[in-house]
Length: 381
Image 1 (cartoon, rainbow, N blue to C red):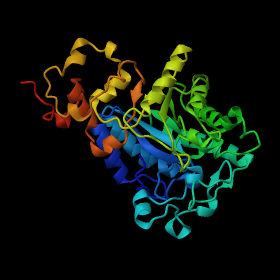
Image 2: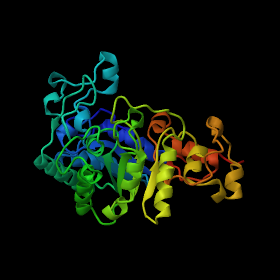
Image 3: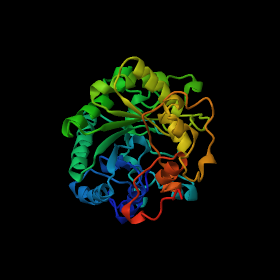
């Protein structure tokens, strides 16, 4: 998640400590926050970037530490589009506005999008990108991907969710173009597929490429055409041939009027629907689930159906103290069918940097602790 602590797009010691703690505490894959491919693609003036060669070495420090713990490092490449030039959220809460003006380090007159439609009142009015500018942005994603490879990252994720630039192109609510990048499903997904191809072309053939999307805008109630789960199903079926290895299924963020009934599994069920449709057609695409994943039993119920669990796994903790296992009761509706191949967690790691160790303790799974923490695991006797 964005930490709003970079200097001119360069990660700092803060990021090394912040991200390093997760690798130190057992996270198998640590993904760097939304990283802008150009300065005006930052969400805030303090966002991380990878548009310049000088930004590679500081990121390599993070990657090297993650690797020193035997874990993998990923990076999320992004462009904020019309949601750029905003203040850090805690500042927004304090001053009552989102837009960062020039004197606050922002660029409100240089915010761009697929169409000249602001996200909400008080946000920047974006300039509509020209076809030529779109082509330049595709190249910038590729250039950032090359730098990510040079920094040693193991995984690259393209951020196409939450109302940022790629997400804006996908939605007919924010994309009202009449050229080859607007109108039909094929046109609205064109920028995304061009970006995927450009990134795939410059990274090693065996390097995993993830894509994060908002599977729905939660705007069906309004009656106007929007991006829906059906659109995401259609998109997902095209991704394996495009070179995407994992689809990270989130939702919302592109319209201030969205209506979401937030509860555990509210996004997981969408991921499960997409996974089932892909499986039915024999499509090879891994699915990642997100959202309010806060316990070991919940995580396991998402990636491992109850029928697939061994008796030992399903019944107890193999003599390990149960710790906080009762923090969330998994209901009977879930856990019957595997709904995703991986769980991707953000907020819970902010609350509990040792989340992996905690849930391993809960469900009785052995994990490798950092050597320096060899006294920490609970003893059976």
